[in-house]
Image (cartoon, rainbow, N blue to C red; front, side, top):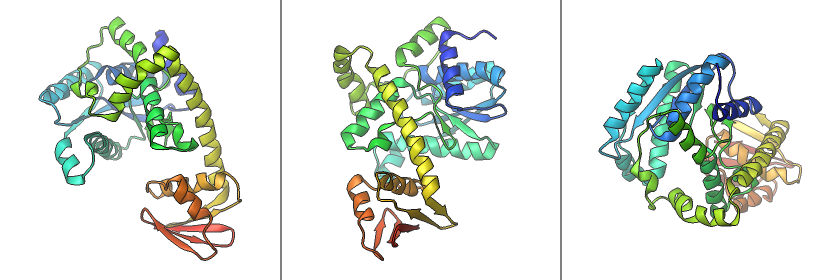
Length: 311
């Protein structure tokens, strides 16, 4: 099977970061937009080469009048490719109000709840989303503005647990060219252009300024992200070396170096909790022997040279 340059680039990225293996069963998140329709067509092609299986999950978010048409569009595209299709209806606006979160967060939460629910039901082992280089850049900028540390600066990453992002190596312009050349149909979401959302403000207001300074700014941020991905792998190795995990607790060995703070934040992620900020992390490290702190649903006790973390 002959691959186009666009497809070769994604294939190499998948191989370089060991994102997929033969016999993987991968659930694709497909909304119907140009990004996810590109993901569907590329992964369909690569499944024949790499020997993995794919299926599609589509969340009908109910945010637009066209939502039902979008669902029907993706269903039809999957039927043409003979790819299994699964969908679910949700009310993002109601979820947003009831849980007191923004619409962006509500949509993301509902999508991933559906993805994981479908993943478990089908006994699949990976989820693939259509995030690309523009999304990576916007996430890095957003996190810098929010005050992230080095670990968080990496933004989106190629693979973390079951979640994969095989298209981070290509940008939106390449996606537009790919769907045009291959006559791939897609739907447009008007919310992608609304300046009510932080990421869209970055895309439409910040990005032109970066482009004036360096037209290849996305590639520069991508290189930085790759360095940080390597750093994150080193942090994970340090965590494995310095942690002892039991059923409901985790013991962390402190070595009075820079990595102490990083492994504490990973410990929170292991319990499914949001990590403390840098200031809170420093307070944890400097606790007196026998001291106890309760943060984000976890209890942390200071031993002589270690921390005991419990739910």
